[in-house]
Amino acid sequence: VQLQASGGGTVQAGGSLQLSCTASGNIFPLLAVSWERQGTGEQRELVAQIGAGGTPKYEDLVQGRFNISRDNAKNTVYLQMNNLLPEDTGIYYCKGKLFTGREYWGRGTQVTVSS
Image (cartoon, rainbow, N blue to C red):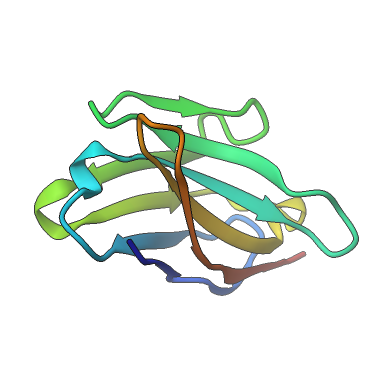
C-alpha cells in the first residue's frame, strides 16, 4: 500500500486548504487513516483521524476548524482545513493503519500559513 498526501500550499491566516491522502491497493476501506504534522524543529503531532467505519476524531488544537472525511470509492481521505493559523504551518503526513497494527506512511505535503 502506497499513500500520497497532496494539496498543501501557502495561505494567509484565516484561509483554507484541503489536503488529500490517496492510497493504492485494495485494502484502503480497512484502514484507519490519520493526519499528523511536523513543524520545523518540532515533534510530529496528531491532528485528526478517521476510522475504517468513518468515525472522525480531532485533537483540541484543530477541533472546530478542521474536518476529516473519506471516500472509499476513490481510496482517498480528505482534511478540510479552515481558519488556518500560523501555528498550523508544517509538513502534513497521512498514515494508514490496518487492524493488524501494520502502518503505512507516505510522503508529506507542506502547509505554510502566513500571518
